[in-house]
Length: 112
Image (cartoon, rainbow, N blue to C red):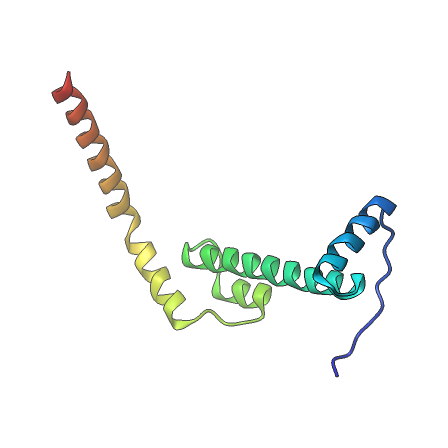
């Protein structure tokens, strides 16, 4: 069995009544419902944080060492490959944006 610890918090009575209502709807205890929801929230938030670190690493805003320090895992080979492509891409990306702007301006002038 997984090691646990007790965590006490004060909640407004209205919130407790609402939690009880929800728990009764799902036919589980309020405590079990709350544990499930906390676990789900923490997993989702952790995934968002790691995704953000991945984006920052791929975008060249953080080093491999910082990525490992913050996430506890090494960047994958795929992430490293994407990072090298991203560093080559900014010029191409900016040129494509300028090209799109020119096309829009030409379309506007042709429609007038």
